[in-house]
Amino acid sequence: MPNLIKNCVMSNNDWKQRLNIVYSTDPDFQYKNSEPAGAQTPSPSQQQLRVWIDRHRSAGKQATIVRGFVGSDDDLSELGRLLKSRCGVGGSVKEGEIIIQGDHRDKILAILLGKGYQAKKAGG
Image 1: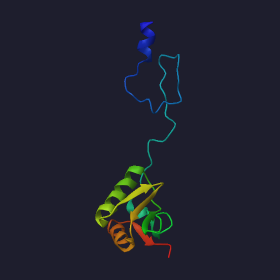
Image 2: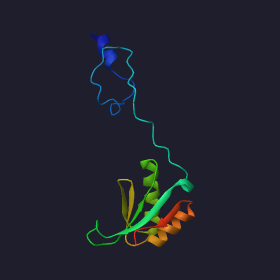
Image 3: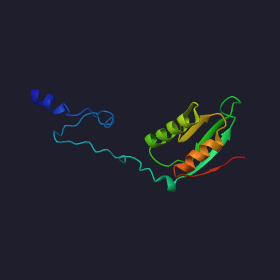
Image 4: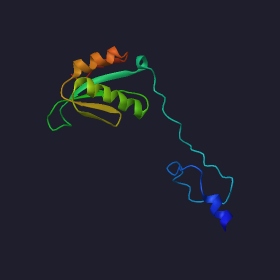
C-alpha cells in the first residue's frame, strides 16, 4: 500500500493542467498537455488595431474601444494598463478588447502610433 501512495503523489502541483485525468494505473504515466504553450504576440508593426468610440455598452456614457489585438492575454493586459495610465482614466480588458472610459480616441491613437502599432480610427 505505501508504494501505491508514493506513485500517486506528484512532484509538482500541476492539477489545473490535468483536470480531465482521474486516475492512471501506469506508474510511469506522464500527462501531455494538448494545448499550445502560449500564443505568440506579433511585433507592434504587424498589429492592425482599430480605435472605436461606443456608447451602447456603458449606459450612454462614452467609451473608447481598441480592437484587433492579436497575441497573448498578458500582452493585451499590459497594453491596456499602459493606455489607462497614459490617459489617466479607468477601463478594462475584456474578450480581446481594451475598453477605456471616455472619448480618448485621438490620445490613444497617438500613443499606439508612437509605440509602433498600425492603428486607425474606425466607426464614425
